[in-house]
Image (cartoon, rainbow, N blue to C red; front, side, top):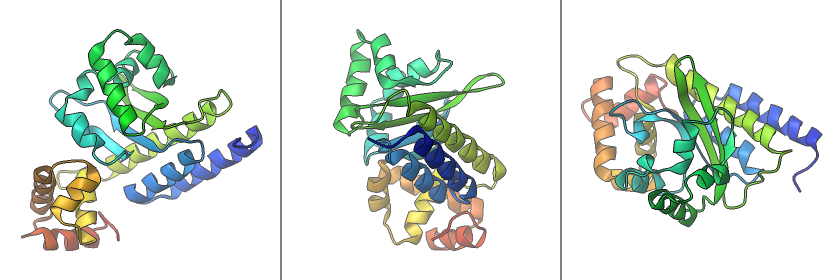
Length: 243
């Protein structure tokens, strides 16, 4: 359906080269989305393992998720019952969502999480745990309505997902200092630069309007900007965001 193994290898290498060339998180997300979409993966999230007291939103490095999903995931505390995330903590290799669900078959809360995910078009997928020196560091989770989970496609998808994680982690680390804008702060400022209101940005990102405003206020403080307009100008000037 998608081509030969040789075609897959060529596509994967082309995608990884594009990932390596990306200089902004927006450009990176675009290339990852383009590389995975041809295999039926419509959504993805690349995230660190949340530290104590940290929200999943703040741990996310890169994502292309359905509108509204992040908000409902946080509001209903799905992280505590997500079978994919749970299985990620004990798995050493990549696994399918079906594998994870099988381990939580009798847990009603887990069933509810996956039932809601299906309503958002995330029917099945693959999750790639990433181990660090002290254990689980993060993961890349990919999903869609009918993704190709065949044995010949999985190595290619794992390859792309692994590079997406490494590149997004590298980009965030490279710029991390006390005055660095977080990925979410850059995101809301990018939409503000394009003329989006806080309410419209909230709808786009699946978070509350109050959260968008909080990110803008935080960005203003880091950039020593008097208001949102000044923050956008400073962010563009310093290369934090691009139009």
